[in-house]
Length: 120
Image 1: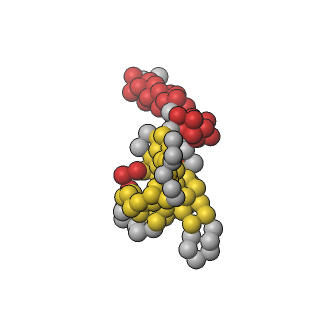
Image 2: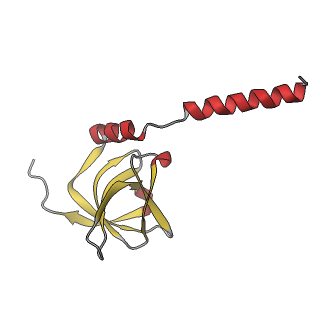
């Protein structure tokens, strides 16, 4: 084995091991976020300000992206925040179907509260 071949093989093994180390358990992360994240009391109304598609995530991490997306000017209700992500609900105005997921808080702007303030 030449020195170059050995370096390439070593790099390949290192990258393979790194990819396993970086794997994210989205279900476990979602559960942790639910337990440790801050809740909005009352829930808040927000509007998408990001251009293009804003994908919902099953957990607050970039690797947990789903196929569901919302677009600029869509309105959502945010219930929780964790690690720069808001847990939101979007209701499709045409079908009435609702979708829940985590999105980057930077892609949203606050527009008000939903419901009454907590009396605690």
